[in-house]
Image 1: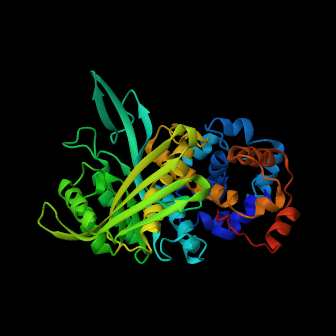
Image 2 (image 1 turned 90 degrees about the vertical axis):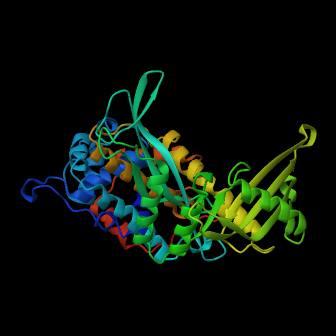
Image 3 (image 1 turned 120 degrees about the horizontal axis):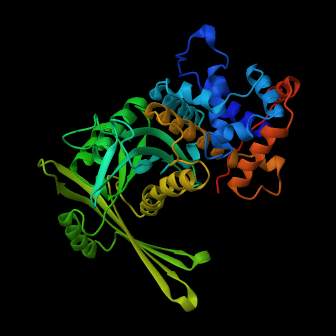
Length: 438
């Protein structure tokens, strides 16, 4: 509990400042639970990875938990899950998302994330979409639909922009919900349409942030190149062999001639050889006859597996970085291949690691959106705890897996005492948190 409180205090200023962007829509004369306290209850749902709102009543409302809640927020009892659901059905999702944005902004301003920048300047933002809810019947007017073999599925997708780092951070920056304007649209919303909305919002919220977008091949085209040029962003986009055929053909022709644009790296600890080759200033004309100057980077990676033989993998990216022998490997590893962290450390953990990203925490779509943002905030706090030095001081031998840490948080909340004197001592103590850079 001390590590949790100190982590939130160090990186967000505490629980009330964390939720400062949210305006309380309730009647002030009828409020029992303060808004930061209810939002904290939502965070605990995800920090302890309960996976369902009904389990809050089973596991988070013990007598010891109620005393801790009173110490933190001045209320005698821990709130019921239905009370949290009613509040979230009325909150503006944009305000709760701003809490996440403000947390990331504070990490950037305090230079917490500076060591993880690409080429010591660019913050890598991976963008990808994922499904979060699916229903056999229409859930709300904004559902997307898919009909197969006469059966219609109603579902919700989101497009996420996450700040990703080599040491495993995947922090939500901006979320764009992919949703129809009504039940019978002329054309359904899609990931590509949502991307342009997301990019505008990302630029408006972080106007001066040096951003490098890490994208999959869906976005390899003139509109994305033009958008990044206008916003002053860099990009590293996956380029498949059957995408942009003229670009691929020209790359193959020029790469054979420009033998100086090649380098080899041997990773002795894994018996891996990485062969890089690239082409600078390749001209590409898009469908609107705009000319873009692009660099193409290819990595062929071969690993010797002994008796099992060799395994070979090829990667290729299109970028507006000026590639050289000094930066090609870093652009590939920290700008291109790092995109998978939005899947592995982001969506996969949230879906299969106990957070319950695909669980319907509320029937009302507005409340479901707010549960989604509470999940993102909780995941960010959990990552800061997991990679912070406080846990290493408490558990020098480690705690095993992330799920073990979630269990320890749950047991601490249910059983450990936290008196006002304890809390005052925690907040008064001097401490420093260093993040794991491995």
